[in-house]
Image (cartoon, rainbow, N blue to C red; front, side, top):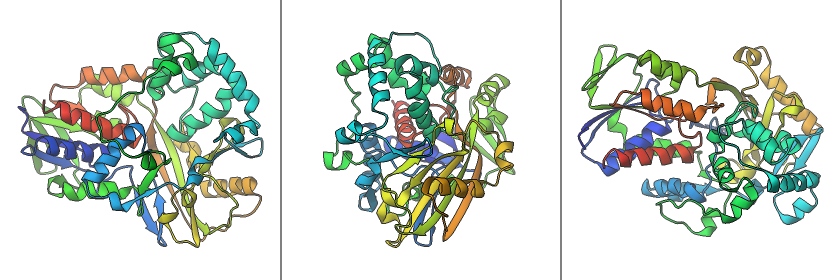
Length: 445
């Protein structure tokens, strides 16, 4: 490898995992991680309140499939004994629809008893007859062709708003659900393609079904345990509170920050697109600034245990309900080990791509959340402790032609800059960690 000095912008999950794998594959490389804030971890942010865990970002990782890559990382870091796996309650999920909670099918019996049974049957028969369509399209248009509008408006709408805080009519199916687009190109019908589809094999350690059959995993003190460990492993390489004023690209990369200048052979940026755009060419900046972000408000609160008669992972709210609330997660149902036995932690997500920052700032979001929960559960919610966090640019939106934008970013990037981050190749921790490892491996071959 000709690059011996690497500067990484950002000490979030992308920057930390890329640095970890780079040091693993090429120990002699000189790495400097520049972080603009006083903490590492980025969107992975866990807080202990009254001996309970508040998650302000992602709250769990799927252990099956490519998720085993994250388990492998956890094991390498010596964190296996700190893992907690989701209770079986996490498999039970709800929609708030038509003024009440409706359980989503999670077993054969629940499917046969579901009020959505006819919608699923109609979607199945429609999907059998679907045909191929080239090019990108919105998730809404794709879902309407394959499953019908009724299915889309309830299930795909809720999923997109729950995972991406996105608008199903704007999000790109090629970027958000690439497997569905891939299956469509085989036989048109997703169902016909699925029966002949062979899951992608990943070069990772295979774990027992006892582990991979769980819905999610985390740590007793929250997901930040993972980023804290990476921070500790890489502590000699991280510089905090860096206020960059310029990046110069030539045979070397020079990053100016106050009175300091950092020089390297290559720069790897993992900071948000709108932050990086200030330091690159106008052509690249134009593409980076075209990637929108959704504003999200997160309300964490603690209730006496069993105050709410709710037995699932959480619920999502379809946009047709016209509520600022996207959904609620019952954290203590999923990970009982993350709190006191007599306390329960809940998280309400609000906002998303259908709201502007000004729209959300004009609302009393705590009041909106409590009012909505009172409608759902039929009683006042007397939180013992609660905290609201408003994130103006929370989740990048993979809107139409996002795949083309990513390609444009790669083509417009200088030869000695690599761009990573959740606005490029996936918003989940699994996607982020997998891409960081993949690029780190490529850089040393």
